[in-house]
Image 1 (cartoon, each protein chain N blue to C red):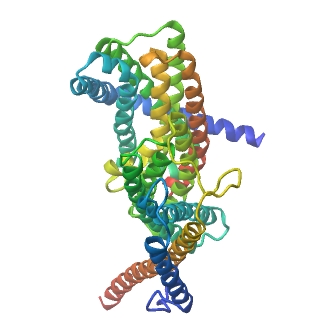
Image 2: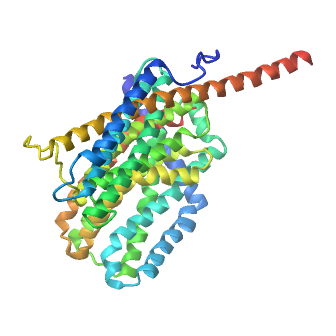
Image 3: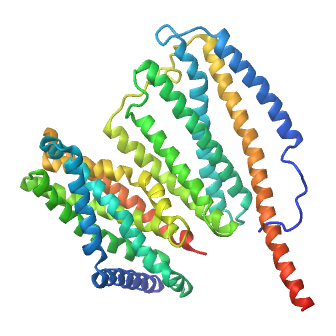
Length: 234
Length: 250
């Protein structure tokens, strides 16, 4: 009975934090007005730098995920800047709220924002890099985006919480986060290339990479739930 | 909690560290002389094989250091009494590990230039090692964040444990990606040792010598960390006392 009550309370906190983060985004429109144009600009800049249609088609998968990871830093820092500027995170802690529920709520909200970002980036790849995808490739691509953004949401929230409110967080977050997200970059890129058929990659090759993305998301989902509290606890 | 009394020692050396220090000098002198003079050049690799006497032991120490950091961090987090001694050993071990990891990568690159013709190849072991280096540079950056000593200990212990989760995932993903590194020569799965006796002995001497250097550095570094923590603590206590005395005199 008591366990059920705790689980219900946890779910309510997680959904409240999730709705709060999305509501802030809906009102401020930082992701839509700043992060999306920034990610789109990265895609255009890559096209300027590489200046070759064949090369762009071949590396489109990697460019999409690099742009996603660069944008992740901005979204995470923005999300935690709001929470720390008026000590909202401290208030949640003082209120005795289960911090693993806060972690889950923030991570899922972050993942949803990343999914929206990736839809735009993949559309940009179709337009700018002339990539193509079959129906089965689309299934692989959707699964890959779901698994990768979930993993990035967990790991971004975890390290964002650690660096929140610290001096030099703008430089510390990429230093801590980039080595951790390397498996996501490699796996998501290979799976996306398989979905696009870049460089003659078969779609079946992509599913093993999606498996790795799912393992990553599971490991950092569990690890993050346990570690988030001690990391941000004063 | 730190003891607020003054430290009982004025230097970081003890009888034990001096013995370890002397042993280190003896073993390392032997490794340098044997590695450069006594051991023969390799039939295939030529003189470049001598890099191995530094590269292999430093790689061993780098990985050992990160294992020590992970284990002591786990002790700090999970032990009933959160002893800051564990945190200091973890921090000292990570610092030494980063130093040996840099030595490993530099010597490996030099050897790669002579053997493969390039300083760097995207091989799983090389790539994982480079990621491990960046991860622990991040760990050291976390140790320098603002906050109390206890906050530093808790944050860095969690980061060290997360690194234990991260490294196998990085390695696994890069192994999937590609593989080129020189296959294990000494620890052959068939138990067939393909190395000259003196070369093998020099290599193992190197491992022992570098391990002694590691132990010596850890002992001194964790004591300098203790002195630094005590100095910070006593500085704060002195400031509080001065402020209290101001109130009394007013």
